[in-house]
Image (cartoon, rainbow, N blue to C red; front, side):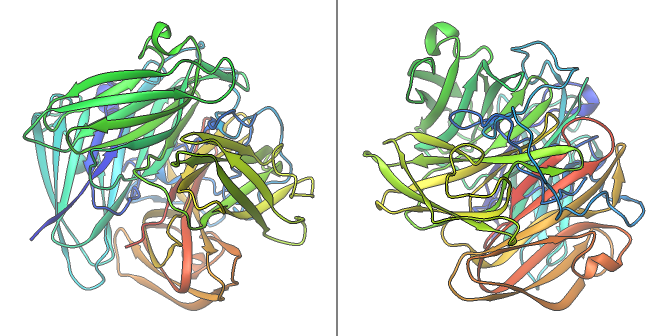
Length: 571
């Protein structure tokens, strides 16, 4: 019997130059977009929410993969062209010194060619998506089917694909391989993915405009009636020379009944952050709604500037994804949560003013408290090398039912070195359920967001898409896999690579990752893929101890935000 997975992705169909949103009902595993947009969309961006969290960190970029890889997954074409072996700079060496002015929680500053303040994401350019589905069975072929429904919930197309054990398939909405409307018309809506084997998925989205932007994000678990917490919501928030607005996408996964939904906006503590408001909306059976904070709710309802969070409740199962636009230049996707955890949360990629390839990268951690009283949270930073120093840990208070933004440039006194690159753990010592996400920004060009690893991680992770030296859309894309040991015992990590075409590549080396530490594997230089000229496909990570895994992809060359990230899928 087939199992479904619920997953929502927001996209616009590039061919029609019309904004499109696609929601995929994916499995409870979050998914990663396999190979973004088959024909890469020109430049996947990861877009850190620089303005994210409570108050953008000023310009903090996540600091792409340590030396970020240059090409984000998103732009990778299914069958990448061969490029030379050398990727711009090993992700590892990234940063060196951050610049200022960019908010980690908030989108970075605006490039000279940014559109006017308040421009909506759709107005900034045409959007398209591609989602990669990975078969998480190691023994059986997966029979996968995808149903595309438009905003009104009408079925517009059905696609099927056989995916080999461990492998992936990229459904690119711009081409026949992922066409959402059988007539070839422009499309905005959602997709439901089902399979007779366990599967996971991730999405890449691209916006083509004056400045191209890319982003990746994990699929959403099966629908829920809520409450679904959206940690960061922005309306007309200025940061680093750019203005940020979010768009909330909500999919009704019930294909038989309309959903009565309430989106409750809650401003962050402090003055000038907006007004609380309950926004009601009805979503047709199987339909999707997009709520753009540039115009909705109105300034009379939530204020002329809104900085805070929102909660979604419904009488039918729904899923939600939020994406943020920074002045038409940066594109970010924020995770949503149906609950938190009182266990430690791992965040594998943390930066403070790290200089890399002419940009300065910094991060900000946004912590959300699901409790009815204030939560006490400890943040412990783990440096990647002796070049960075830490003294003790930082203890913060997260308001009841609210969020707190911790910018590593300003709010991390335990980091005693001028710059920092490493990882961190976020621990609710008061026993409250919390969640955490990270916004990273690199200069005025790069940004991305990823969710923290909850539940202690796992011993197996699936990465629907990754790249090495893939030339696409004027960029050279490469990825780095970050592995954080979340336990107290040392771990040995192994990799199996599944090219989009060809036989699996088994890396027989066991790579050590010490307890509590993290390691970065740049596919340009590390693992068995280092000896291959190019690679595009899925990855399976196996560990002898619990770990958290994420992928960072960067596209070198070209212009615009070509930095992306997603979390590894844990069965």
